[in-house]
Length: 146
Image (tube, rainbow, N blue to C red; front, side, top):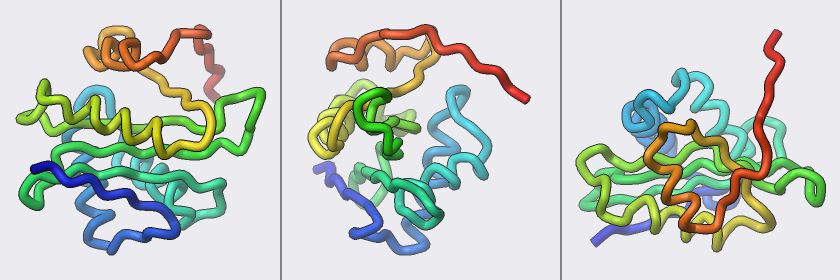
């Protein structure tokens, strides 16, 4: 049976749990992931370990092994920008196609206060899940990077 654990600044995880989450995301985000340092910053932001609006993480475990995880950061911009950004979601590569991603998305949508934005690569197979769950491609994102 898969267990779901919510982690916030109020339900603070142990250090070993944070490291396990970081390692899991780094490995299972694959080509859609970031450097470990950036993933760690998002986790720290969600848990308010750095000055931030906070957020939350959700971890799904099967027999004490992480099989899925989510990191959501609050934006603090209610009304004109979604209140939450889903920064990372990943499912263990050996457990994809079993509904874990859907369950994590359902939990995320239930827990988040306000709207949720996420970025997804056009070729990411998870894009179809997000669309089924009601996410829309409202804007084309453009960035200027210094």
